[in-house]
Image 1 (tube, one colour):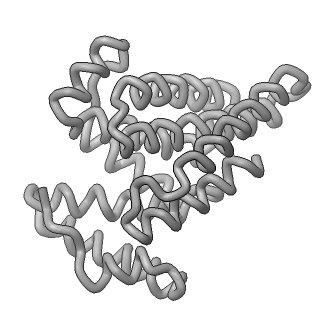
Image 2 (tube, one colour):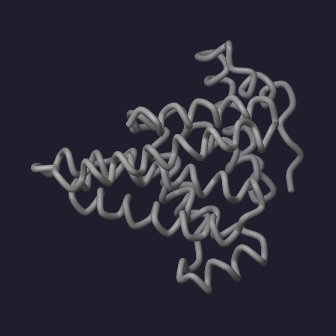
Length: 205
């Protein structure tokens, strides 16, 4: 859906500038519009293919809203949007189990819950989000990175970041992360985010 894609582009640009609050109000408006359009279209959808696609875009809008809320220090809002994302993407997979792109938001959800702060884990338990599993999330990131369509580039970026964070467990993770980022930087030489990571990955937590 157009508004969600536009919001995604702004989020990428803000991340490239290391600005968590970059055009936050504009992004929020676009995501609300994207979720609203998907919800309205679902009410009149007449076939499973259309419904699965709309649930994917609805889940994507909620996923970005959760990301924005987390970046802006709003854990309760982030948890609510994460739950809505999970529900929409699970509905999409229930309709079309071959929707590889639908798996990306669920991988972020899984990884985020596993590596969340104590406060975020508390909020997640209170609102019924449960826990997460790092290894399952990494496997899902890899699946979407290799087989995704709309979400393949984002999946490779998120997978590389997750691998780098987990490099204390296995040095091979760091090498794989750098390989993925190198490929992204070569494919998208104009992207400052990939170039910056390639030249100096963030310090490990």
